[in-house]
Length: 411
Image: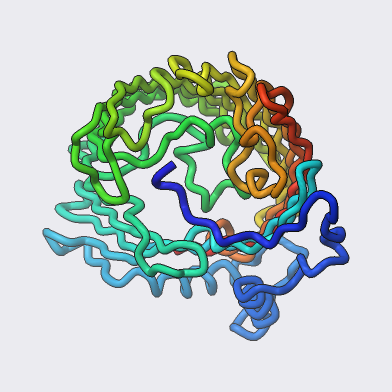
């Protein structure tokens, strides 16, 4: 995919000479970002509050860290008739992976996401402006591409109209939920093969009571900025229902979204399937959380035949607001022998991968944890995902385990 984030060349070992277990290998080298996290953890007791690493954050701790993060808010004045708020926004997500598979082994650190930009609220906060860009792995280029660049107008509390470069409104959890708050390192395999990425768009979202709805149009000829509008277009719509009162839970969201794409030789995104449908349930109650999301993509051609997949993702707060456990089961199947793709990260880095990592059925099980230093704004993650890809017209079977550690920082 043209818009895909660039990788560093991984350190690989052929399957005939597999790398040592990560617990005993150089895979646990401390990289700069993880060193920074460890320094921060060590310094927490000395920055004005008592830090108990095995207890929920105290009110004093939360207030002190909130004060630090407020430094990114550069201007705030509700009395100003034009500009009411201006704040910097950014994130850094770094992670190390170790792949051990029947197709060979690989290990590398990746600066997964590094972004910087701003948010502004204008005209009695009815207009929101967002612009941010990202660099690439190892910061080889300070600017690699735009991420978001849009204006959002809220004429009232129930309507929002967005114009600019933004996310197509499909995949209520796996795509539209920020990666800052997701508990796994990567989105599900089935979503990652749909070729959905940010596009120049015009969308409208609304709410009537407990019912939400959305509609949008998107340019498939969107490059690293806004594109040239020389290709085809996609159109979508969706509806949701907030059922928390009926369930008696803190959260219980149902969502159904649809996206239809035309096709043209100049298309750069949204060009793999004619129609994508996603169905989502996202619930939270007490220490438990649960997401179930399914995707059906139809109208593909050649090796990209129709595909269906889903994932089930429970979470449990072992220590409230400090330590969360997460699991995820993923499944995908397609109409053709090569219609299902392996995960791009990091299964594709197995050096002896056959059949381009394609088959007709995929299953994966992820187990991991999040350790919150300041909620989703600063946290450490660790996890392991076992995956099996079966079938393939030219022997594309894959069986492997990916171990990951990483840091998430955002403001």
